[in-house]
Length: 610
Image (cartoon, rainbow, N blue to C red; front, side, top):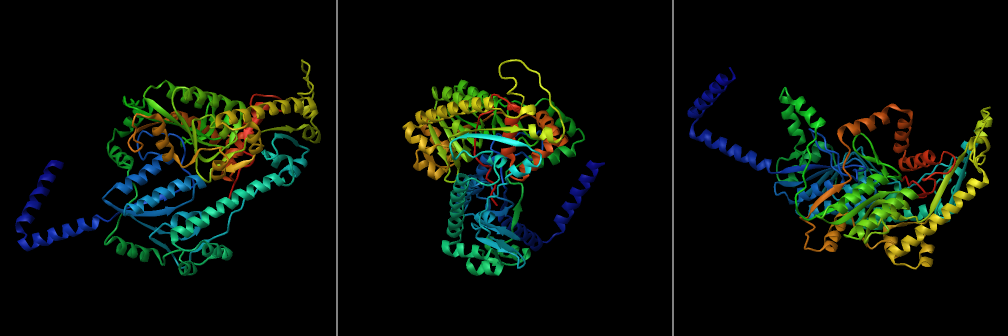
């Protein structure tokens, strides 16, 4: 039946063609040519989000594929080189950390240099979204919108007085006066050291916001800073000041875009992703779900080509002993030393890997787990170049795993350093008494009574043992940094003490070697590898392997169905995800006593800026 219908349709079309006069054929041809001309004004939707994962993206068997941060950058370069793309429509739904913001802005500027236009329509904007939107050739807002310029604020909650209501004390020890991690649990107010460091960091970030917006809009920095005094800037005021280019509704913006692009605009929301089209085709096939199941049960293994390549090992999240943890979307929530060491050993054994990039985005964590990863970097370093490429934060344990690499690359706003150690021990004995819970303990060994923290609290023997170990770990930390960086230990000690530095400051202090992002790190890796590797064409392989579908389901199910998992998600949304993960690891290991992860090399604060 379908064949007959198709023949009838073809026959009818042929009759119409014969009946049409030559003038009609010419008009139709002109119309087709006009439509083809209009279709050439293709504009790609580019969305800026608060964060893209810094790990190998987990592959899904069908449908749109995930992209990690480097893949996002590559997509922007693909758009820049595509002659069929006239420009991009920017949608800002958040902003990543300042380090990755610099990387994204660099590639968005390259789009403009390639002759692509950038347009953006926003109903409201804040200072972070304006850093991206200010690049637009056409930046429009409705008359009822607003630009909120409130400056930067870091709020830290101190819980000592709250914990005192249930007689719960937290014993925090640190080596280095700027190693203020967990002070929120042991103090009622912020320490002078923490206030000083946070203030300097905010000053650095605030300056970047002002300079970026001013340069991209072609107005003076003082003029931009004056708008921050107004806090809430109306669209009309923003247009007068040169902050945006037009005030109008979306239909007026669309009309303006047609003027800019020279005709009708076709927006591509799925550029560079064939997954959606593949999914639609599969749904048309009644046996499509069987194909999906086959791919789930037996994923295809990709064979690496026999050619020289660069390996990128992603070291993401708080550092802990054991294996890495990830959520349903494949995003890593905690970095396990076993996982990273295995990845480094894998690239070491691969003779086609000529250099390694350790991409670090971590506030640190377990000192011993950090040391295991550091040792693996030394095994790699003995045979092939290894470069530490720092993302938004690579401090404390994050710096520990970076310090032995041949080179360290950081962005100006990367948070790094924090060379110091800290421990945190809860003392729940008062809570037990207040709740009328009588704890009895039975043990053996010379110090078992000291370890009965539920009954007697944290005793002096535990405090001394941990403190002595912390001093030893701190001295080893400083010694390894001094050797890795070729610095005098006495000079380095003055830069340590838990102090957090920006990448720009770290460069001046010789804690890093150069400023740049992932692409600069790839270029450096090719340079150190020798053999004429071209950073624009060199093959890249990413480690560790992303969890498979069933592993993602298992971990996500645990997150969704347990109270503990829901609590972690809540803390993550509040901006304390890394802090909570590190504290969880510490409590699991110590249990109120001694353990392998008791001494932590972790950033002194979880900087949540708004």
